[in-house]
Length: 158
Image (cartoon, rainbow, N blue to C red; front, side, top):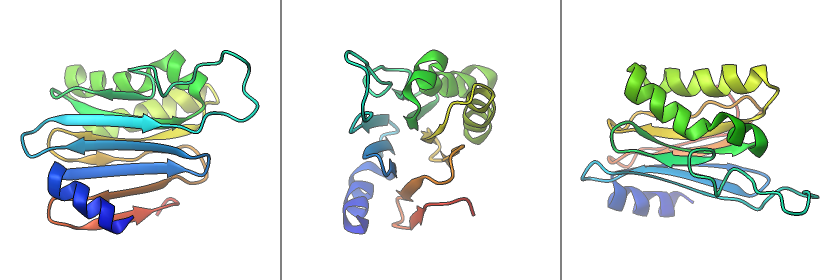
């Protein structure tokens, strides 16, 4: 994983990734030209109802990026991410309210989702390269590498 993160950092400038044991992979990146990108892939939900669509393919719910604010990719209880348009909401708070990425992400994940009993977390990056990784679950695998090659890997709160 470290080698692939370093290669991505060399190309992108900054790269961040999160993963939950359910095989969801979320990424946010900022390239050297200042472009932000986010991506999410998922293994889906076990025993899901036929026809259920999760948050990953819905732009704004589980994934969103806007060069004027931030890039967000998340994972968790998809229905709550859809209802709350989580990724786009975080970006809108950064852009229109002028709050920090950390504050916007914390407010949505730790307040809005928690108030509705929605579990999950996000990995987000703003246009200055700041990274926020709030989660309201016991743990969330997450890692990021900066343009200078510094790698950070975490699972639990610390």
